[in-house]
Amino acid sequence: MLKESAIKKILFFILTISSISSNTISLAQELEDAEEIALERDFSLQVDGRYVSDTYFSEIPGKTPNLNLNESFISLSAAYQERVKLVLIANLGQLIDTEKLSFNNDLDIERFIRDAYIEIRNINNTPVAIIIGKHPINFGQNIQEMPGWANSPLRNLQEIREVYGLTVTLTKSIIGLFDQIDYSLYEQEKGDLSLGKLNGHNLRMTKYLNEQLLLTIGLGQKENDDKTKSRQARVGLVGMNKSGKLIGWAEGIIFSNDPAYPQSSFALTMGASYEFVKQSKIVLEFNLLEQELIQLGFGIKTTINKSLSTGVDLRFGRNLQTGADEYYLGLNLSYSFNIGTKDQRAQELLLFEDELDDSFDE
Image 1: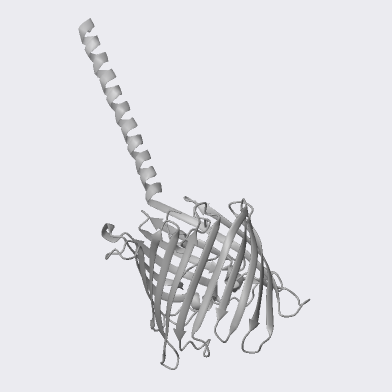
Image 2: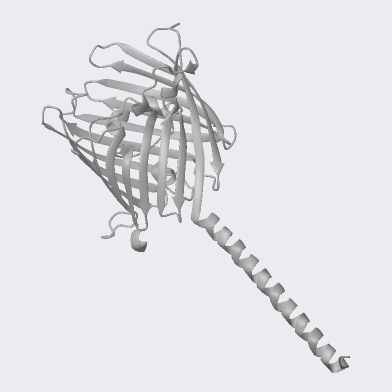
């Protein structure tokens, strides 16, 4: 028989092995959990979108209203470590026949794929972002305070959509004069899946003059079909009061050889919004396009919750070419949703809308 001291040594050995095994298993589980947490932190997958219904009346009183879903979209995006992001956005307005309220039998797949791009940020920990692919190019301020902002008569002078291009952004200016500098090289042909000639250039620079005032300067050039050059220069200001309830903006644009506006060389937009009660604001906007039109807009917009908002948009103006009065009355309903590892739904407008739209960690 074993001596009592030998039995104690064996029991101590068994308990030691058991303790080591238990600690090893626990450590392995902790490492596995840490790897899963790191994986979840490094990768994110989002499915988000927005349903925007613009029901509007124009030109003829009593005319059958038009329903526009062209600003509605669904987006699939995947990101790694907030450095690389792949985005695919589908235009629901191309998928649905608004007259029959059914799926469109003549789906234009090239227009259906609204955006498809890759975004790379913080290369070698430098404050640089690069966007490559089919994506919108913003020329100047991106103020979307009117409920029916997509129906602004100056929108085509403010951005170009559904084009392939390359945008390089410095989020911290090297020379220190501006807070952000964007340079874009883009094609002219819109709404297809083929890469055309990259003959459009745009430079946009922004500077916070103080905590409530933002300056935007833009310079652009593109090549027309007849090989002439169309150029534009713009200066804009956006400001808000300390409470954030009052937002004002103004932007002047000088341009030449624009085939859409051959008689014009100057445009102006200015406006203000005021939150008169919580989650509800009134908006006034003035638009002028030299020798083309003059327009005054009035809107009321209410945010019901984080996902749902609604508004009324009234625009009245005069066509300076024909002298005819024109009006637009729109009812806007917007619903946004998000499914994924991060909540990336659009937030309320700050001074510079792009800073929200383009960020990974909204």
